[in-house]
Length: 191
Image 1 (cartoon, rainbow, N blue to C red):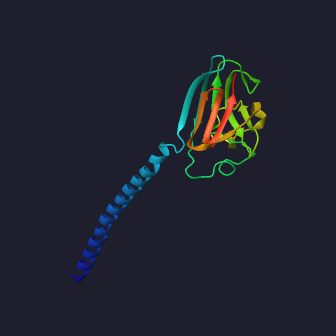
Image 2 (image 1 turned 60 degrees about the vertical axis):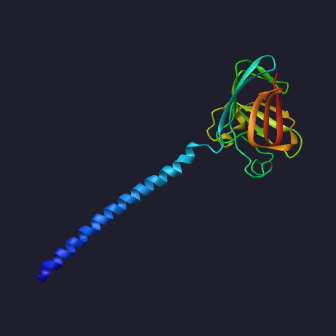
Image 3 (image 1 turned 120 degrees about the horizontal axis):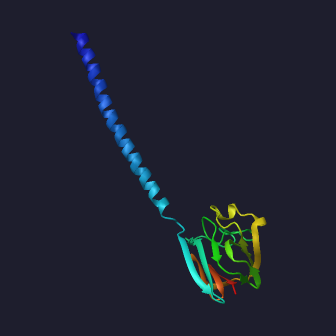
């Protein structure tokens, strides 16, 4: 009789452990699923929102433009987050692109109608290089940039103002495309 009691006790213990073990696994799976959903939710909201703008400049030239708009968030932008003398995607995430249906002039140089990625090379002082590249659909911006695909490179003179702008904006306004971020204002003349 003692043997059967011991045997029954072992079966009861195994059943209890299985019962609670399954519940624990279920809770762990539910918790993991819940945690995964919490982690995925912020990914859907971009830290640097995607902005699309359309406007007309010069002789009724219509431009479409798309860029990722990062924020300063207390960081040092020029010469740190965005290094000097290196190609910058002029935005965040994928490459910024601009599209127009007719030939235009940019800073006095002709740029054929089309869709282009827009890059800049910031400088600590003096003019910045503005680049229009034929590879406009670059998922990782400047990491995929290839100089051999440049269609046009021009120079533009930035100004730095007193008031700081938290989020990057690229607008289509006189004199063409105007990039503003932190204390930078970079006008790119389009005719």
